[in-house]
Image (cartoon, rainbow, N blue to C red; front, top):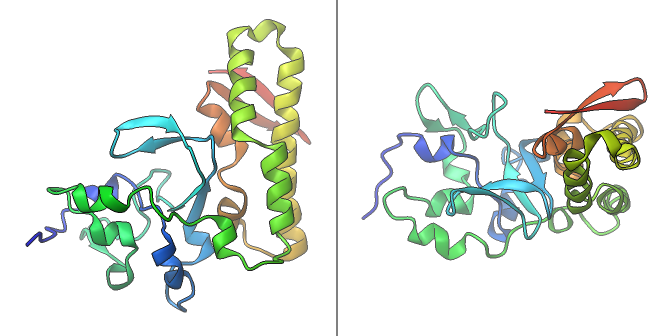
Length: 218
């Protein structure tokens, strides 16, 4: 029988993606909160643990956030290697055993949760999420970023399009926090990682400059 040694290695490689079987955990009073989740949207670059490489995502996934600016699962008590939600841990954590990856691989890409699975029909933010996904599409951003980096000095129009994405991404987060009173920590669930974070993965630094952004190559 496989027995976890509680070494913390798996947890330090990143929190789990959530599956439909994990939905009840989001409804428990002391379970996983929306502020604990980050949405990785289709087309974003993300680390694929089984493959061991950073690849564009084929589909949206919800993932437990990391801590300390890293992907170390936020529920890991790092000093003791204890999971703080062990009795209510997500499906991937139940299946994961570092010496035998097969049980995890069997469910890894199946029945993954999305924001639409979590939010009830008619939720006021759903329409904003759709608008954000259209105007801040990670695939489109990656195409623009690649083209800009390739010929930076002659990419003024492309850089302007990237700034427009960045401004919309920043503005919609501020709008939802102000009008709906939702905490800043929940914006990663509703709208995914900020575009300033995503664009850095393509070699561009975006720095707030008044109501716009300054762009430079890494």
